[in-house]
Amino acid sequence: MRLDISYRTKFVFDSPVRESQNELRACPASDGRQRLLGYRVSVEPSARMLSFTDYWGTRVDQFGITDAHVALEVTAEASVETQDPPTFSRQVPKGSLADPGFLDRHEEYLKPTRHTRWDEAIAKQARSLTEADADDVVGAAAHIGDHAAERLSYQPGTTDIGQPITEILANGTGVCQDYAHLAVAMCRSVGIPARYVSGYLFSSSDRTGSIEGDIVRVQTHAWVEAAIPGQGWLALDPTNRLAVGRQHVKIGHGRDYGDVPPLRGVYSGPGTPKLEAAVEIRRMDPARQPPTPMRPSLLAAVRAPRTRDQQQQQQQ
Image (cartoon, rainbow, N blue to C red; front, top):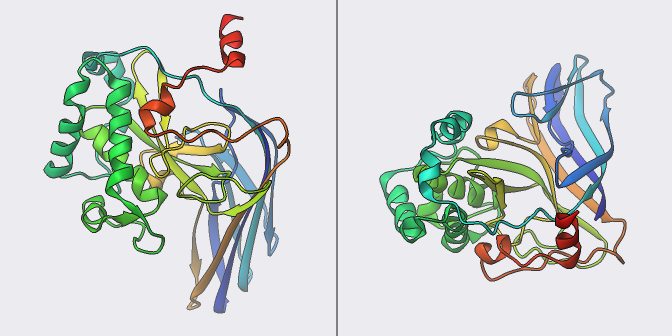
């Protein structure tokens, strides 16, 4: 699927600020499932841009504005081609999670962090969900994703970044970041390395993954990837139980939201900012690419039968 994306953020201050320093993470990654075709960033007031790749592999555009200003507008435009990832069909025993080499490579994705710190109640629930999956790490991760989808009700504005996952779970509401943090925390609590993913979702509804038309206006999205020994990273979208595929555009990943915020900055001055943010995504080849089908569970999504095209690609 060919998608053109426009990410726009604007800060308006109620009084002038003297200086601001900012980091933008909005550029889609290039990996085995998607290919970046073009990307550019514009800033008003204009600023010199320094771009680099951070520790987690995400492109960062860093810029500072030293003149006094009452507004800051950042626009990032990208074109990307996406495809569905391969399905995970081979069972992997849980014992492989204890392999010393595997543990060493994924140590950072096994520890609790500010946004994924679990308690014994969360760990106990995760163990109960995965007890029947002794020979199936894929199934265990998918069951955790389904559980996160069931435990939270999608309600924007009911949670704040930095709110403990235990508190979010107790309240039972949240947005995509909260679904992802809960799934990451539960995976790690049972020894499955998991990482938080930031990106975009081409969908008319962040909660259902449905599509109406070829242009959608959304916010950034979040999902989770679980490390499966011998197979790679299994991508799960617990917010809407939609198979991670052509509709998903990955920006980057990290231990939690704190490693991949879309825009982070500091400023000097008494002004209080008002934020406006929006993402517009245009599907450029609607006739050739239908949306990824929704499935009753994440396990069904990641173990779906391959299409004829996927089977032919595997044989080549």
